[in-house]
Amino acid sequence: MKIRLLALLMLLGVSTVFAQKGPKNWFNLDKEKDGINGMSTERSYDELLKGKTPKTIIVAVIDGGVDPYHEDLKDVMWHNPGEIPNNGIDDDHNGYVDDVYGWNFIGGKDGKNVGPDQLEVTRLYVMYKKKFGDSTDPSSLSKKERKEYNRYQEIKKEVLSKRKKAKENLQQMKDTKTRLGTALDALAEALGDKPLTEENLTAIDASGDPNLAMAINIAQRAMAEGATSVKGLKEDIFDQIQEGLDYYSSQVNYHYNPDFDARKIVGDHYNDLSEKYYGNNDIKGPDAFHGTHVAGIIAANRNNNIGIKGVANNVKIMGVRVVPDGDERDKDVANGIRYAVDNGAKIINMSFGKAYAWNKDVVDKAVKYAAKHGVLLIHAAGNDAESNDITDNFPNDMYHKHGFLGLGKKICPTWMEIGALSYKTGEDAVATFSNYGKEQVDIFAPGVAIYSTTPDNHYKDASGTSMASPAAAGSAALVLSYFPDLSAKQLKEVIEMSGAKQNYSVKQPGTKELVPFSSLCKTGATVNNYRAIKLAQTVKGKRKKKNRIQ
Image 1: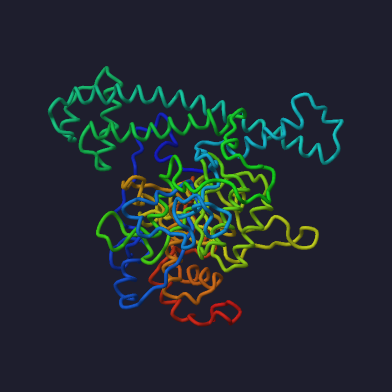
Image 2: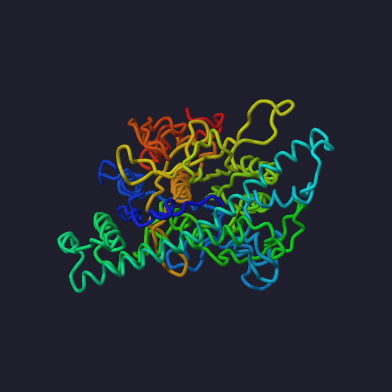
C-alpha cells in the first residue's frame, strides 16, 4: 500500500519537519471569498443550492475500514434496505450475511480480520521462488520462462534490499527517538519555569553541549510553526517518530517478510478468481483510521453542529473493506467494486494503490462492469512524488488487454485519477508528495492537512492523495445529488471541465523545479464545486445526447 509518512521522510532530520496545519475546513472554502484555494463548497450551498432538494447518492468507500458508529457518520451510513441486522441470515439473498453497512472482504467467517499483510512485490517474490528457487539454471529455461526468471531476480533484489533497509531505518528511528528525547529534556531543564520564547532560548548557553544546541535549533524552527512549549513540541515529534517506528516495523515484520501469511485468516480459495462470497460484515476492522477519515471528507454530517462538515449533504456511505496494512489484493478489489455496483453505489472512492499487480485482468473486468452500470470510479494518484505517466500505479483506468493483438489503447470512460493540492498558494500549491502526470492524472483536489473524522468519535488532520480523492468524490456526489440525470461520463466531464485553471508555476513534487501547473495533470485545474454546479445546470436533461456535454 502506497502511503505517505507524515513528516518522516528524513530520519535524523525528523526534528526539523513539523506537521502542516491549514485552516480547518479549508478544503471547502473559496478562493475569492475566503482567500483559500479550496473547492468552494460552502459558497455553493450559500449561493447556488438554497431551496433545492437533493437526491440521495450512495458512495462506496473501498478502503481499510470505516467506523459506522462515529458521531459524525452514523446518520450518513448506508443501511442495506433488504437486510435485517444481526440475525445471521442473508435476508436479501445477495450472498452476504448481515451486510448492513457494507462488506469486509479481508475477514474470516469466524469474525477474525486481516490487519497487516505483505506488499504485492513480496507475494510475487514468494510465488516465483516456489517456481525457480535458488538453484535454477537459466540456460535450461524456455524464452518465456527466462523472462519470468529475470523478473524474479529483479523482484528478489527489491524485496531483500528493502527489508534490509527497513531494518536499518527502524534502528535509526529508535536511535533518533533516544537522541531527541535527551536533547529536549535538556532544553526543558535549561528553561526551567520560563516560557518558550526566542528571548529565553537565546539566553541559554549551549556551548559544549551539542544536544542542547540541537534542541534549541529544533525549538526555534518549531516556534515558527506554532509551537508554544517544549512539552508539546516533544509530544508532536514523538508522535511523528512513532509513525516511523510503526511504519518500519510493519515493513520488516509484514510488508517485506516472505514468511508472513495473513490470507489464511480469510479462508477463501485464493486462486479462484471467480469466488465472490467470502469475508464478514465487520466493515470497521482492526484499524479504521484511513477509511473513516476518507468517509468524513465525503459526507460527514453537515447538519448536526458537531465535528466537521463533509462535502456532500445527501450521501449514504457504503463501507467496503479490502485494504490491509500492506497491499490490497486484486481479487478483493474486484469483488469490492462489484459489490458496490450491485448494491446501488453510483460513485466509488478508492484511496489506495500499489506498484505491482497480481492479476490486473480481474480488476479490469470489475472496472468495466462498473462503467457499464454507470458508476464513477475515483482513485488516488499516489504519494511518491512521481509521474504516473512513467511509473506503474495500480489499479488504473487502462485495460490490460485491448485492441487487436493487444495493440492500441483503451481506458475506462468513468474513471478519475486525483492529485493532491496544498492549502498554500503560488509555487507551493501542489502537495510535495503528490504523484502527477499529464496523461494519467485528471485533476487535483485538496489533500494536505485535511481535518476529518477518525474512529471512536475523534478527529484529526491527515494528508495524502488519499484525502484528495474523497474530496473529489464528495464533489461528484454533491453535483450528482442535485443533478441526478447526469450519466457517469457526464459527471466526470462536468467535474473536470469546470475545474479552476491554475495558470502559474509550481514546484514539481519531489523537486524544487518550477513547472507549469498545467503540466501536472490533464486539465491543469483543481476541483471547484461552484463552477461544477453552474456547468451542470447547462447540461441537465441531456443524458441521451451521446453522453456528451453540449
